[in-house]
Length: 387
Picture (cartoon, rainbow, N blue to C red):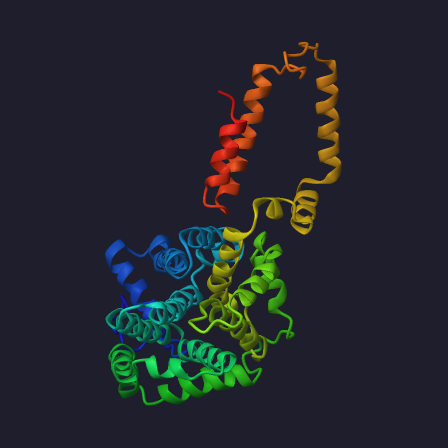
């Protein structure tokens, strides 16, 4: 685009490239013109989309739940190796993830809004984000939010949300953003419509013509490894989120988010073409569910979870190493001369031992405080840190 000046018809090595819409190409071309043609400019849009997704999921968590849940969701997402890796790889999936997440979160914020004007603004923002999702990777930008709304209506046995979607204004916003490029590229290239809509959407999903055939369970290990170490809390987080809204008459944001994530994974598992990055849009809603779980779960339950302790502690550090370290520590302690006992009959500690113990426990208490609003951490830190 920068070299040819043609910002309507994408080209790759001189050939027309109709596989995907141009939003990310436009952003990267603009970065090349502003900052030069280099690796940083090429990755800039992807990195900014990743950062914006983290901030967006935190904002939605704070508005829909509480500040602790929003902050925990941000930390879960930014520390997930799958999300972190794709934030530095130039693919279209991070941009799609940003705009589909913005669509669903705006819809939930509209449902949660108390004033009609605020509800209308958030709903129109959802339509705008959906248009940008379509410009990022095609019709999938419509399929994901539409499927989530459909499943939400089925679960609630209520179609009332359909009447609040601002169909007329929303459709005008959507068409104003998404339609111009499709019209211009179709006028300039009569072959575009068939290739883009038929070959790149229906044939890619229903056939194996792209030769990216994988088994139906392909995305299960991707999800498990990609969410480490939080995958150990994921089943409990999903169960708690689902139960917490059982029988609720008002909005059920967690159930809609879970339905959305489940549909993304199932949809691509059924596809005839699979790549590891495809299920990235499922990660932000799941991070929000985990964040809520971490913010509400008792610290002792989190620290004493046998699966987390066994898999993370024993496998990554090793039981043998821990035991050797413990034996060495006890042996060194046994060789130290005794300092006697204090007035209460307790063995006296060296100042270095007290300081070391306080420095270790203070960060741990602060980490636990993330899940309990900081109150437990402040109390534990005040108790354990030596003066």
